[in-house]
Image (tube, rainbow, N blue to C red; front, side, top):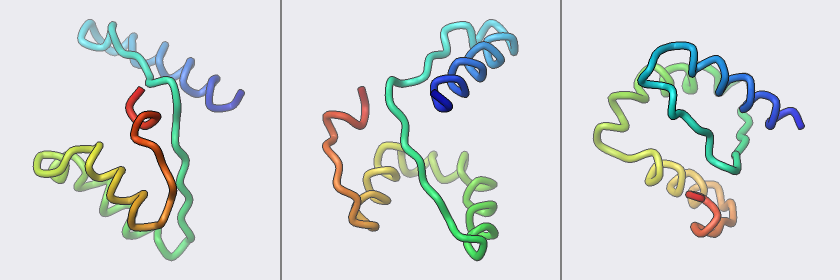
Length: 81
């Protein structure tokens, strides 16, 4: 219920930010990842450079790479809706 509520309220909020966001929709599923306190600086650096990084590597390729790197089983059929 928490994820549903977050997705619902953030969807309503983003749609108030301009006409270019009126068609915004979340995908059906979601993923959740955790890090330890020692990983916070690297995560902040990743977020700061995310836009630039995605110019050369798609989100999809990056996600699949992370799943493989950490041995998380997945089925691509369920990743992209």
